[in-house]
Image (cartoon, rainbow, N blue to C red; front, side):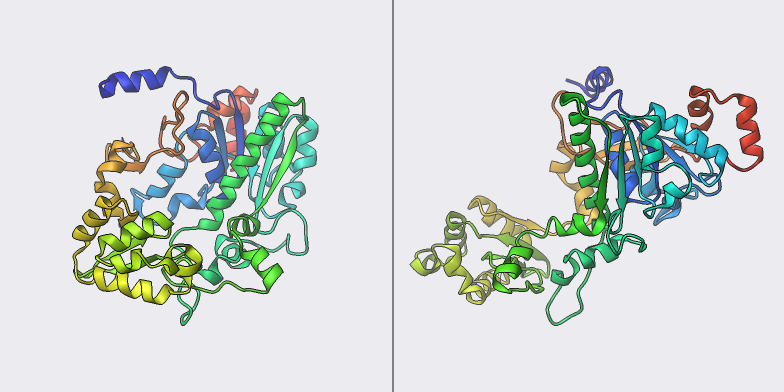
Length: 408
């Protein structure tokens, strides 16, 4: 099927979340990324922004003609409406929009929306079937709930930062706001479960309380039971995976790095044979992971010595031939030039409003019958205000008054 026929077929497909109406009241990452995921699969997302400046994400990181490239990606398929949520007029409009919405997503500090008269109790009263996703640093309850929370702090509190890096250095962070995106993903899971409960079980509307700190803690594997039962505190282990051997990063002879994961029992034997260490492949002490853990340093030295004698491409070719999981450490350039990502449509071409070409990451996950797609890139500030407000009965004269007062 050629590209035009494929695109035409996709245009005719009903997306998985078609008909779901989402009202987004939030800024930056955690709340807006959750609604972004819903928008990519067909939800009608109305994003409410402040009339002056809008979402700060519009001005974050690399800009083109004054607008963030990140904005174009994260806000694709959303409609931008400008309203000053602190004003009674805007709050009344929010209540009308919520009355017709299936989902409201917000990531203000707990209590903020209640102060404005548009919190959970107020909005669920006008729409008993409403689902509200509430994302915050520490959750809606508890002694820390009123603290300002960002991903950097959540990653510390959830245990991620402590185990990241090398033991002889300060803990480090990953290069993205992982706490935000983890919270967004859990939030989307919660929204979809709540929608299912409403439809399949005759349930009622509910709110979903997602804390950034808890979203991080939830992916920390065996961190808690290991401490609770044995008192073990997992420490930083650099590029290795503690207790799973061999799995590490090794310096190649050409100065580049390769990641090799030879920790399955069968994989380990293939790896040892591939690097010319048949003796280690046949050693019964190393047959299972618990034995290999006792000899972590020796095994890393053996693999490292072999890697140091070969360039990266030779290592990848050799280990691929032996069915040993391995890989280069990709830069953004490597990702954009990778044939597999291209074949999987994970790098997609679009145009900015001025005609400038831009590439954006593709959509995950890939649904066979109702795939996600990008209908338009992140909108201009207030681009859809007139369209959306008129749909709930706001007259052109009323909108003009709101704009004159700086409220829309």
